[in-house]
Length: 197
Picture 1: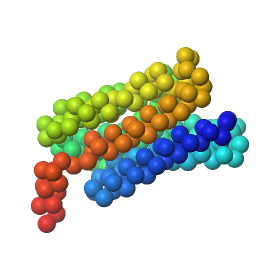
Picture 2: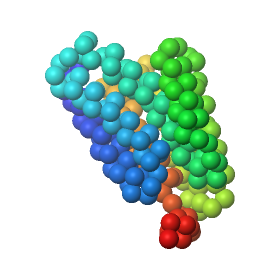
Picture 3: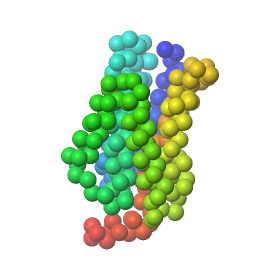
């Protein structure tokens, strides 16, 4: 793989690291862990490309990207659901995320459908949030991963390098949009402060 493929992986690392730290500071550990998992896949990709160990690390990169990505999205959607007042147990969240990851690991169309279904559920939760003034922007940003997966990743129309960089850069921007959608509104922040005081 060409070395320049590293640069868009680095963009995901930066967006993921920034986003996870912001969410941890906002006491949203589930969402922070989900966002951080995208950096894990990107780091494996960086090592894979930089060292030339393409064949050796390709399975690990694929596992982290597909199964890990689905697991991460389930955690992110669970954090959004908590914003809506839903209180699933951590065990239920992990079971759902693990089931989605196993489905993605099996490969085929079903894994992609599970990811897109989680994405659609997240968009619905964000778009119908009654306390968010930026819900339209957040929903559009959150939904952007759908076309990215369907039309940009491994596109038959785009040059492979363009497809690679576009997919990874859109993913980095998507992570920023995810963090924006999870950032508490001033009213929500005040509620957190009063409940912890």
